[in-house]
Amino acid sequence: MNSLYEDLTEITREAIHAVDPYHAIRKTCDLVDGRFCIRDKVFQVAGENKEDGFSFDLSGGRLYVVGAGKAAPRMAMAVEEVAGEAITEGLVVTKYGYLSPLRKIRQFEAGHPVPDKKGVQGAKAIERLLEKTRENDLVLVLISGGGSSLLPYPAEGVTLKDKQAVTELLLSCGATIQEMNTVRKHLSGIKGGHLARMASPATVMSLILSDVIGDDVSVIASGPTAPDDSTYQEALEILSRRGISDKVPPKVRARLEAGKDGKLPETPDSGDPVFKKAYFRFIGSNQIALEAAADEAKRLGYTPVILTNAACGEAREIAKYFAAIAKQAVRHHQPLPPPLCVLSGGEPTVTLRGKGKGGRNQEFALAAGLEVDGLENVLIASVGTDGSDGPTDAAGGYADGNLVREARKRGLDPRMFLSENNAYPFLDQTGYLIKTGPTGTNVMDIQLILHRKV
Image (cartoon, rainbow, N blue to C red; front, side, top):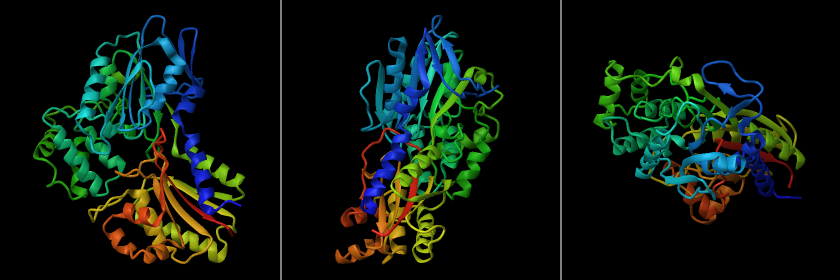
């Protein structure tokens, strides 16, 4: 019989494999008699959905491929295998260390989660490429998580340094991805539908790997090819609500105020004609990963229960709730008797209180470990499907009833580490980190409880 940790490894491996964008694109895209085809439901940004898929005749035009995100190179590799020599030119931007072997599509590496100069260079290179497009061309846009940071294009009057400062402030105050992207779209020349405008008058087809709760296309990677109905006023309200209005750089505040006063144009909204030739299709989501995890758990003998794909809020608070579920399962065999696998997905946040090293999944594991101290036959874990949790080389962490005991043997105080947001060294020293390496995909996080007699 496998250990709980071995079962965890197999379940997360299958969940991540199910949302591998390479396999998803190979299954849904094809080149048939000079036509680029996409199977199943495709959404038109401004118009009717196409239930029977999408087909574009390339005989009178060209095919360009651009994109950004942690999964962009792996997506591009699949497109190259599907379209081959039909690709005229392409360029994708990804996180350092996430490159894939590509033949025709160029790759840029850039900073994440805080944008850097390489990202600006990549965004400008995409703009130059899209200047070549004509009405009969197709622009394939590959979008995945991380695209917001990896494709910085400071709007007029704002510098990269300003954007870096805003990003760090938003990350440290626990802002949701929706809040972060509302602000970033109004400081960008490429997000919030501006990339679609760059590609006009060509047809734009976006293949999207969703990393946001609710799969809102306007939020994923800050919606570079989607309409944006948010406003400068809303961006200012977010800064105020999060208590960072007086901390953002003066140029940022000045731009948002000018936009609120009508001195700057808003981002393209759903009524903008640029979206009449814009389409998109989802190729992966957190729900798909959860269902695959549940199937693997069932194969291993567990009864799986999926709670939600929309877990959000402070990671340590969600961890406490999961620990409470684990205690109920062990003590009362509820919601079901063992072997039991409880699953959820989403994107918790961390409000930084200390200066430690870690990420939301590691913080979840440390907080959960404090709550289940001494509890037997149970394991709790949280894993980032991209293999990268915060600015670390870990995907996440796990906890069981022995974690705190192991820490005490080593003279470590888990509460002190948690108070400093310093989960990485704690889990590293106790042996409770989860490391997968870059996975080539990104559909938020998966949390789980495993309970059975070992």
